[in-house]
Image (cartoon, rainbow, N blue to C red; front, side, top):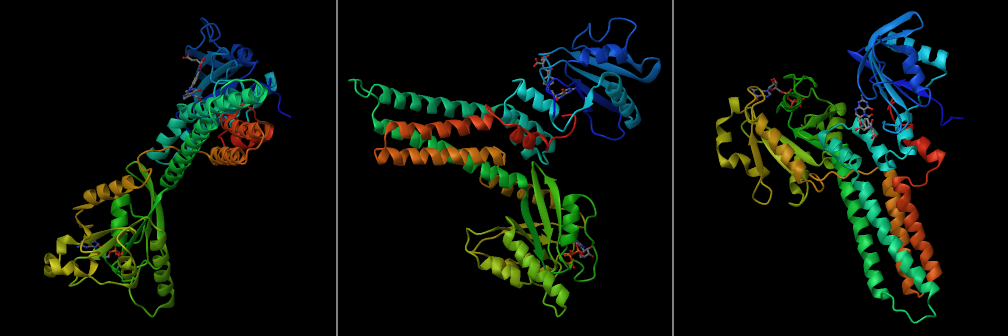
Amino acid sequence: MIQERDTIAALSTAPGRGAIAVVRISGPATAEAVRRFCITKGPSAIERPRVMTRVDVRSDDVFIDDGLAVYFPGPHSYTGEDCAEIFLHGSPLIVRRLLTELSEKLGIRPALAGEFTRRAFQNGRMDLTTAESVRRIIDARSQYELQGAQRLYSGELKRSIARFRSALMNLKAETEAEVDFSDEDLTFESKDARRRRVHDLLQQIDDILARSGAAQRVSEGFRIALIGVTNAGKSSLLNRLLGWDRSIVSDVHGTTRDYVSEDVELGEFRVRFIDTAGLRLTEDSIEREGIRRSIEEMKRSQLILHLIDGSRESIEINEALEYELSQSSESKKIIHVLNKVDILHEKAHEDSYFDGIRRNGTFELIRISCKTGEGVDLLHKRIVSHLEEEPGGLDPFLLEERHRHHFQAMREALQRLLSLWSDGAPDEICALEIDTALQNAADITGEITTEDILGRIFSVFCVGK
Ligand SMILES: Nc1nc2c(c(=O)[nH]1)N(C=O)[C@@H](CNc1ccc(C(=O)N[C@@H](CCC(=O)O)C(=O)O)cc1)CN2
Ligand SMILES: Nc1nc2c(ncn2[C@@H]2O[C@H](COP(=O)(O)OP(=O)(O)OP(=O)(O)O)[C@@H](O)[C@H]2O)c(=O)[nH]1
């Protein structure tokens, strides 16, 4: 059983060798630990709260490291308890020495994953949505996801929950007033006006869920399929876009037998490029399987880059492309990329070269050379702007699955409330649904939490956070 009053310590910087390692301590024995292990000639770190102090880190007469220390007396600290940070040389051996001494001499135990932030939450330093966003900030894998997490950290969700709660409280107060005073001759806001307010809340919940769903899809990464005949230069383009040799580039037809995928940061976004098997009719069964899979991949992707080998006399339209071009104009976005402009076939200068790929008369074409790099930047920009056009693409509002669950439950309670009202149910029964909605709103920010819920939330954190 974890004691709240335990003093905890952990390495808070990334594990392994590094320039500097920071050990963080939190809890009642912190000041004693600093006094005992952080030795100064002049004023101690304890006497100079929140000021970085040069110290000799030592245990009795045994030298551990030349370091720096900061003491944050509670409640003005990250966790709200007495805290300290000791900056050491980034050696795992030094860190282990200090943590061992803290444990053996003062009974300071290693912190669990996320335990500092958990204490910050439990000491009222932050609400649950802010605490959760700390992990998301650390784990973000694109600027887009980071921005979404930072909006949570800045309290955007907490504030909208506060608005929901006050609207629900008003609704409840009025409903109860009606129950209490129903015999008296008082005028209350008409049921109609109240209905409209509930509809308005439902609309707001739907908007939040829709925005977060879109943001989630964006942050998980767009799938971009690279398709085109063998030797068109798909592998070369992927390498150009990624900036390093990820897939095998060769001039033997059919090198890419299966698809390779790669998650990369492209501008603000995380995207997954799928380099599909070179498409050509073949008797080779393994290669045919690759082709079947590239058609599948193409169907699942949000954007298709169709690579054309501009050194050839004509554009070869294969099954996969045929399928895609036959879809209606609202279907998948497709960018045709004319590659090898450095050795362009003379026919590729004529408009008729592109007749086969027009869809409803138009098509988007970008000319590049993977050999010289010409046009690759422009293509990169075009891909990013396609991503930005995606719904929710520029408005990251990321929610945890837990938040979505409670919003859904709020939504269902409010819908039941509306139908109870329609059925003319007693106000006491209606008030119960408002309570359910209120409870779910409170669960999001963590007004009332259980050990079990907190355990699940913080166990996915890093140790030391
Ligand atoms: N070295 C170090 N860097 C860090 C953190 C940290 O704890 N230590 N942080 C986190 O892990 C983040 C910064 N967040 C923090 C939030 C609050 C307090 C804090 O001590 N708050 C007190 C004092 C406020 C003040 O002096 O202005 C308070 O709010 O009362 C510290 C860090 C990122 N960088
Ligand atoms: N001159 C020129 N050669 C290119 C260009 N892009 C690719 N190549 C060459 O074309 C050949 C095929 O390129 P890859 O990138 O392997 O083509 P791929 O589409 O991945 O081929 P498969 O995996 O067989 O489907 C290689 O020899 C490349 O060096 C270009 O812009 N100009």
